[in-house]
Length: 454
Image 1: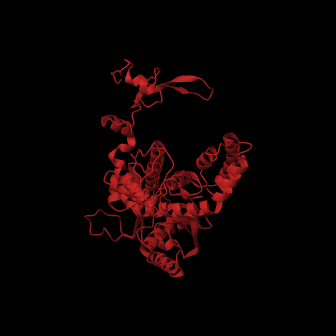
Image 2: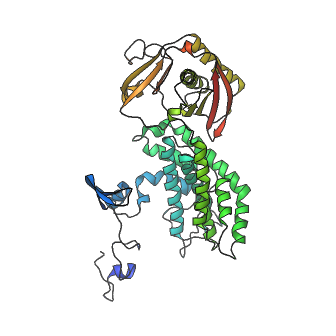
Image 3: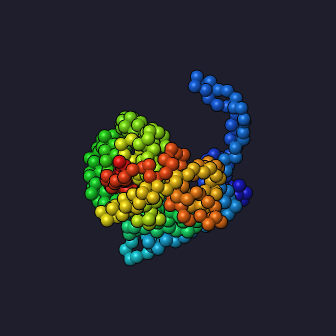
């Protein structure tokens, strides 16, 4: 409560926020820092409620909202974690986050620049960019790179919406990867995996921005025409929305915003129904996915699974440490491995990888399983699927001399060490001759190898 009165004896808060302002009002006078959530019941399949075995009270306090309150500033985007990125955006668009401008319109920076928007609109654009790029950066550090499906699609939507909003500030292309790297600098001491993934994240953001700008240039005018044609009936065809989302990768939020700017509605319910049908078909197609990447535990599948370990290490030797496993699928006919790398492999590189794998098979190295604490395995440098979460104790397979601690003279002589649950051959000589069948692109920054053994 401001607790003071104007010259007419009217409280300042009434003058600014209205007479009937209350704590749940959206006028800006109050800010929610947290709330108490009483978790007491659960809903059964029959639709009734029963008491939880363990009842809790949760304080729904957001860390950044608490920080904002401590700073006596309701705008969480004024927290120090955003400062470096805000400064970079300002340098690229020549308008500051706090800018007020003349008569509510921002007119600053280069001669003739008129952003034609109120300061609050400009701040909203800043906030979308800051929020989306930071969220995407953390998601990518956990292994979710931009793609057409699953969690990668969420990252793609965040980045593409950030690209579109950056255009509103007339920024030159290519800025988003710089923002991602600045966020890594801010958080890397608390989240070391951000620094470990820096190259992967920066490359993925730059590629996604570049790809979407090409799509915008090619397909953007078509969408604009569809929206313009829909102005008379004030509603965009759901099939058009569906096509631009699924075929061209336009985030649906962008289409809704673009249409709304011209008074056109998007039939969200009809669009969502089309998406549900599309997803049902997709789910039917992937229902054959295998647990742990394995179709079965047959002798051939087991040989291929162990060859998979040899292949990953060989790829890292030939292409560099940037290579991380991004998924696998192994049947008795072939192995398939997805890995992070942003270029097509040359014939020479594929031949070298094959050569290394077959050399290790010929050496008939022992394949040994060890169980240990996750932290100990990480200290030993055990490879694991990028972004995968593991329990406190893990199963680790090593190829070569018996897995040892760093103080053991045998340490470092092991060819490969990986988190894995098995099954595997006992010696590499059991695998047979290894052959790469195909190497191809899966998505931005992700390659795929199909291989077999005989």
